[in-house]
Length: 132
Image (cartoon, rainbow, N blue to C red; front, side, top):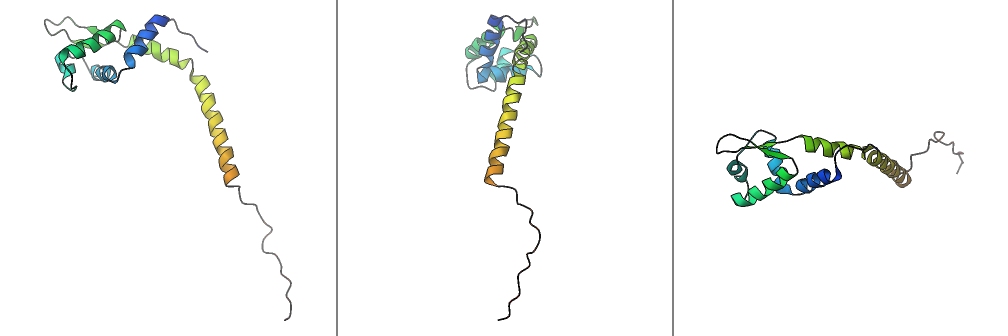
C-alpha cells in the first residue's frame, strides 16, 4: 500500500470538511472561480453567518483561502489538500479493485449456475419407423 507525506491530522481535517454536503457544494462552486461569502450563500437556504462557519471549517482544512481584494475578500479553492486526500485514497485502489474483481467472478459463477449453458447435441435422433 502506498503511503503519503500528508500528516494524519491534516487528512482528518480534509475528510471532516468534505463530510458535509454544503461544504462540498461550496468547493464545487469555488472550482469555477473565486466568490464572496454573499455569492456563496446565494444558493443555500441558510444565513451568511452559517455559510461563514462552513468556510472556516474549509479554511482550517486548507481547502479554501481568502483573497485580499479590498472589502470583498473572495474565497478561492486550494487544490493541495484534495490532492493529498486523493493520494491517500489511491493507496487503497489496488485493494478495492481486487475486491470488485472477486465480486465480478462470483456473480459470473452464480449466473452460470442459474442458467447453465446449453449442451450441444448430436443432431436429430433417428426414430425407428414402425408399421402400425
